[in-house]
Image 1 (cartoon, rainbow, N blue to C red):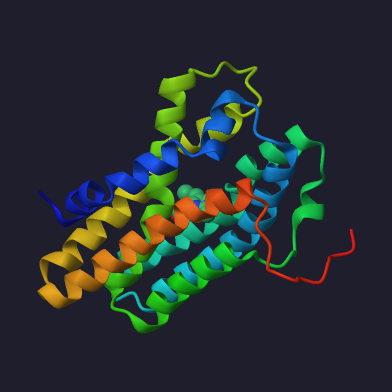
Image 2 (image 1 turned 180 degrees about the vertical axis):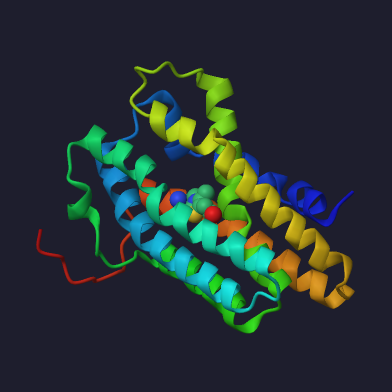
Length: 228
Ligand SMILES: Cc1ncc(C[n+]2csc(CCO)c2C)c(N)n1
């Protein structure tokens, strides 16, 4: 079994909890609340900005052109393509995408990006990859699960969102990250592998908590109310 297959198996509890989370199920059923969708897009827009910056750190630490090209392509993909699923949510709730941008991150999203930043700054290349991988991997499997469970037609309000995440690009991103992580793991000490496992599991836990954050409209305690 490859290292990434082992990670997937060890974190099956979290993957299953994500597929069954009421936000994810609400996307499948098409009845997730507008407030939860807006909360998600606000946090996710900032999350994706941080994700591109972390890819930039991984690019800066790359040792060959293939890796440079891969991270460069991924930054372009997040910048130009990951706006489509957000637009799908915005159209459904009748809010302008621009109005959901530039908001402060709720605690869980803040924690998640700082967790990835930590591994990107302080960890080995393997640790960076392990922290990043649950992001495309969980979404790709969410897409597959919702397609199978709900068989959405083109009229489904979130058909575009679900189709985007079962797409070839997300599969490709996941597989490329897995291949690189498996290569690093093959040349890593048991201690180093433990650090990769820890980074991967925490990212899976934070993926689950990100859905919960959006569903419960999580905010910082005693936060100063934004003027809207
Ligand atoms: C919290 C959160 N986690 C994962 C994704 C999905 N995602 C983000 S970047 C990317 C492409 C990676 O190259 C993918 C699939 C998201 N939107 N928000």
